[in-house]
Image (cartoon, rainbow, N blue to C red; front, side):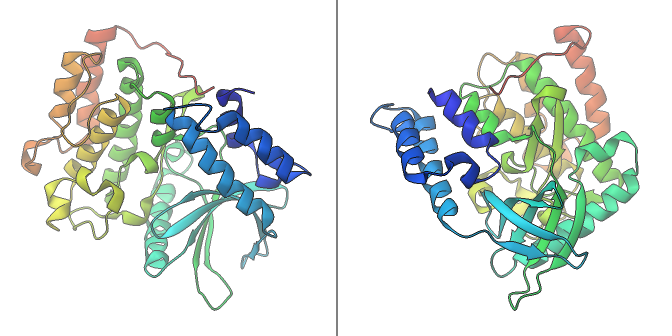
Amino acid sequence: MTLDELDKLIREARSPQELFGDDLAAALRRFRAVCHPDRNPGDPRAERLYKDLHLLAEQARRPPVTIASPKGRDYTLLRRLAAGEVADVHLATAGGNDYVLKISRRRGGASLLDTERAALVALLTAAGNVHYAKYFPTLAESFLSSDASGKRVNVFTRHPGLYTAEEVRQRYETGLDGRHLAWFFKRLLTALGFAHRCGWIHGAVLPSHTLIQPEEHGVVLVGWGHATPLGEHVRTLSAPYRAWYPPEVLERKPAGAFTDIFLAAKCVVYLAGGDPASGRMPDTVPPEMQRFVRSCLLEGPRMRPDNAWELLDEFDELLHALYGPPKFFHLSMS
């Protein structure tokens, strides 16, 4: 088994029990032998997989947890997908369907998830059945847990084939081709343009909140717990990405479309294999695209673009000059 094969096996397993099978100890030994850091010296992916296996083995040893909702659904947690700062994200099953559950973990988490619920209800209601809805997670229900903890639980319909921008960067450590950056930025600007028209600022357009669907060139913007109405200040920020935020967030000044555009441009720099802190991008990215992205990263909010859809039109013109008519450019995550 190769590292690629093990990585795929871990990502596609619906639960730790499914991954390890009936003999956890034997499977764990076999998988660890594949990704042991001593066998793969200097390979960060091997170290990541080795740690992931340890966490999944711990989950496999625990009895399954079921959470009941007011709608009568019993959600059985299959595996933890991510551990955020205030909430955990789990893959779960109920009634034969898979869901993604975000569960507040500590004080303050419930209020962030309630903000997420309010923002998504507004956005999905405004989108209706038109194509803008595909840029946002589908909220199935939201409720407070029935136990004494009073945890907020946001339940989302699961859409397979999505990867965080962090996972894409791990797969392409030296950065994506400019043509991939092009469609990614276009999709992100489309999502933000719609949200801004609805009066919402995302406030945390970061790699962990940006999901990419390679097969269809799709982007889904999650993590709406940091959202705020247009013109108000962003009340919370993600500590691991503090250095990414523009001055108006750190100084608690009113946020605007220019705030989300700034963070979206940081994501482009990140996926290009560049340095988000400085905004520098590698020479493999066309200079014209680099200049365009840098114009979104100016310190002063008034100096930055303030309309995502107008910026998208300008970006389309640039892309046509660079690459000609649009063509599908496949992004492989296998």
